[in-house]
Length: 423
Image (cartoon, rainbow, N blue to C red):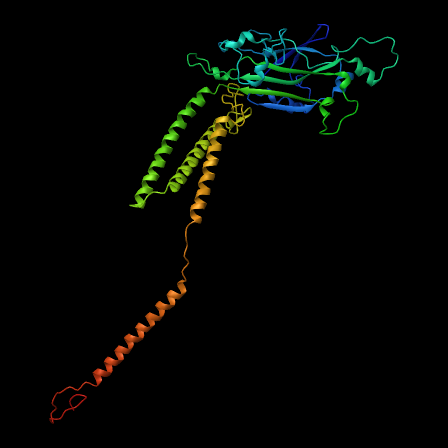
């Protein structure tokens, strides 16, 4: 679990105490069990809702300032620290912070969620971090009340409110560390210091609509703007993409060999006839689609096995886990969804397979098919066989008659001839 602590301060700077972080960072209401899911290591979290500016301007109490800390009970060597709270300050990065010269040095961080703010980053000196932050401000933009006004309506209260400010976007970014083989400690079980990214937004009080607009109306954001809270867990995937590139090159080599072998077999089957380029191109498209498809299957299988089947927070294949490996997460998914490399390979695979099917249909549509009535041929052969049988039977009968009519010139005892032999 990600153990965070807040120190709270009143508007005049009075220290109000410490609080364990649960839902204090979120302006959206909801179930506490769901709102605190982001504290589980590796659980990316997104929550969006609409905030009623009228309630902030008129009903919310005065703003509270916070300082965020990370509870770190272990030392760098893995041993437990001394008794007492061990808090590490979490820097706050306001993405739309503007310097006096008009530049916004923190803006690029909003588009770089996997960027780690450590000593290896060359642009670390250009970032302007902060410590205290607030979720909304309904006091700083309020005018001094006019004592001559005796009545106070909603309209006049909004007119007295110059601007209303709120945190429209908050993101807590945490990155896992890489294992250092030169040390005896498993560095992959640790995290880099997190940081909180905030983007503030403001609106003039007089432009806040008095009535709640309809759902999807063009002026809906003037009364009910969208606010977002995110928790992003990431890790360095440079080794993974390096190995993936090597495997992809090997895949392309085997694909070229397979295409060449199919072309050779096709050429040998044709003999002296020339090879059709359409058939060769169709086979190459099919081979490319098949190889890329199974390559994507292997990539997805890696993430399924090493991410989805990691040690859970409750059991390891139904067996309760101990405190030494509880909540250990070592593999995280890429942040970009879908990944650009995956989307490119999948698109090539889809286009190649579609081209193969289209060319196969076109090739087969030009084939002439002759249907032969086998019943006529069978009837002819039956007639021929029956005629042959009759002919053989007729020959046997004729031969028998000829034999019976044959006169044997052999003398009898009485010196007479007989057509049926001796008498």
